[in-house]
Image (cartoon, rainbow over all chains, first blue to last red; front, side, top):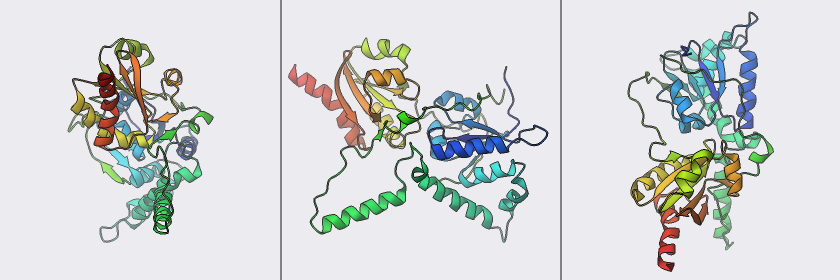
Length: 189
Length: 133
């Protein structure tokens, strides 16, 4: 049966421990006392066509790159905007989430701070157990500088044989896919 | 990092699928499309959550366009096809395996995400094989 999407859907990276943890927290927090859920939480999964059925403009690679909230009107919130949208739909956080929309001289200071916080968290996720995110940019820059300094003092550079490769050793320690709840069939008929 | 709102409405300004040129093969279609196929076939073992696969994706699409119709590039999603990945002893992603008439003739793990590097990776094993014959 084809269902119409009536609630926002938060997509999270189920191959990242931090994102899984946050996704499950949102899912637990989304239920109000009456049992109503303000936002649906779904793992991104592995099926590009399935995501396309949720929103024709949603590319699976984009979904893994940054957090997405799919809105019932067909638009998408990305990054910090998606976090704000999620908080607006949680019973315990909606009281302060309204502040992200507050404009001062056309500028949204709280949203800017949230965007920055999201960007930092997103970058340092590997330090907290994201198996699929690679190294944080900060760490890569430090390694690049260290390597440069070593070379400057005559050290022999020893490049990693496969720097563009994600080993499966970490992935084997956990299931590759986590099923939270089945995705709706299709959102718009 | 991307922050913002994508105001694309359904049914309008549809982005092309990133995987349009590279077809996904599954365990059930692998034998027919890869092992029983004639000529050079490249299979990328990948996962959508892997950042290196994300980096190589547009490059591989470009290379696929350059090498067709001589070569066909397929992808195998190892998150779904874990048995298939196990049978080819995939140690990580992305791994490119080159097949000629169903036989593995080359393998590259984590190629640099540049057109020249990937193009060399997906053409050299076949050229060497042709030279040896």
